[in-house]
Image 1 (cartoon, rainbow, N blue to C red):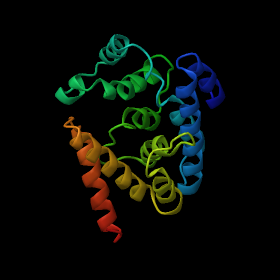
Image 2: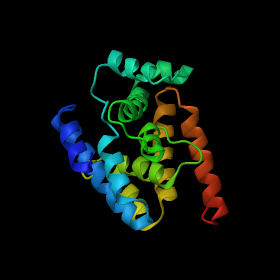
Image 3: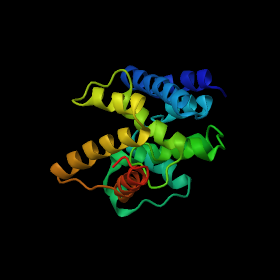
Image 4: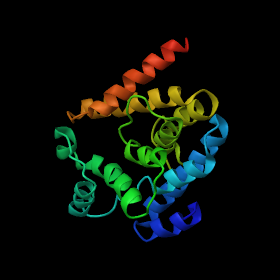
Length: 194
């Protein structure tokens, strides 16, 4: 299947607002792929599919995750908001037949990030923050960092925003997000940008 076929498929799996978001993430991912030299087609496909399981019932999400042989850790078990990315990756692999590990990982880690992210994973993580419909306080800063500075700058801004928000609300923070944050800080320091 190509990006257009995936676009038609996800339209049947989500409401209009989520569909517009997914299309906008794919659009931002293509733009970022062009800037940073990633595979544009893979970026578009991962962007389109990143939220493919976001609006299905939680029990169905959990069933998809378990059918993929994935065992949720304690934080994931208690935070169903993390399930859609895991289920989305399994759905893409098992139902849609996507074999490209980079696309599958980009879907899997678009919510938490992780240490050692590939270029495509970083692009989808950032694109999810900067789609055209996003209007949160700081989105223009995030877009500027993504398009004019570096993916790492944008990721750091996004991770700081997310981790701070979760901590203020006394919610759990997945170790992948902390590891991603530390990895980005280390990368920026190594590049002399921190």
